[in-house]
Length: 217
Image (cartoon, rainbow, N blue to C red):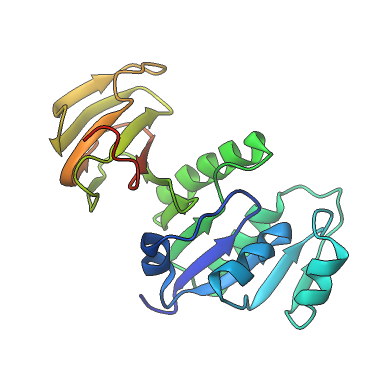
């Protein structure tokens, strides 16, 4: 991993796993408001802390007083997470890890992180979202990917549009050139047989994986 990889520390849930540590190895870090609490757990120091700081208490501010801050008013036109991503891109990021992007108290923020990731992927930015226990990867027109997953782990493909030409390989329930109507649950709860292959001809989707959930084995 090189210096163009940035991990954005967000306010959702984050469980430190070996897989997460491998993902962020060598990364640079930017924290969005209360997401800085994950820095202690991960043993990292962000190079920048952004936000309106409405969800960061006095203890957090004192603990991370040495980190450079960019402060914004609460009445702003973007979330703290989107601002943090913009700062990373301005510093040359071409790969983003959104850590703490899922779970937590604000499901609206979690969904917005997913939508933002799809938009960034369409612009050619490599991006993934993680809670440590769960991961999400955007899929857009023409994408092909190989994803290392433990045998027996659960994953799903969520279509944000109609999907066409969806192919899933090395999985319990394979598909070839499949068309998935928007809103269909057909691609929920598949099971990896090891490293999986995924391709999509047209549409926008998220592949959501649970690498530590082997209930499907």
